[in-house]
Length: 265
Image 1 (cartoon, rainbow, N blue to C red):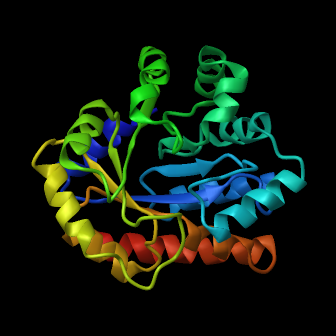
Image 2 (tube, rainbow, N blue to C red):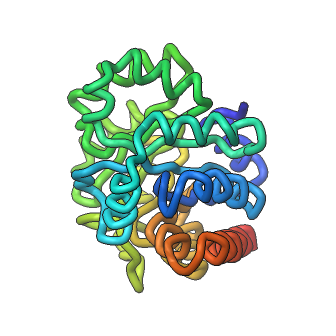
């Protein structure tokens, strides 16, 4: 399996930008999640971010919150999500990055949690409510198990904090493009361009930009500003939730292809 770091290194050598779709596991159902992972991989995704449904998702906007609520109402648990990853892992070339809040990790214990996700085939981890000051308790054992913990940089972060997060983040740096929660925006904030420049001045690690990107045009603009990866969440989750599961799958397949075409030129 290709690691998150190796994936970005290969893309950098090819002078390409990573496309990173996000979907919520279990919405509309786990069978569709498995199909969606395979389809996104086929339609140009370079990495895939898979959200674990959580009852109090502080960083998620209304679209992803609603998807998580629907999944939870159907009884979807972490074990179910990991079973889906295990099922598709041999068929999907894209590294799978798990997006989860810290509570499920704390509840299980850091080491048992990491062992569980490693056994399923997860290669990266995003924990949006884990502050840098407490990240070491997760990052050190994750490193030993070959799981890369990706840290988030907020648009309000001062330069010293940018440096500290850039130093610690593994795989890539997740640059949040807006102040607030996830969701589709009609415009990507131009401050992202300056933030990318600031980060570039302190690190050569890959930088992925997420939160608010919802169209091929926005994805291309973020790439042109210098991003190594474009992360698109709510726009995928919304399409997958509309109509029948088959219609949702067709919609995300076409959308993924259009994004990849835009950023690959």
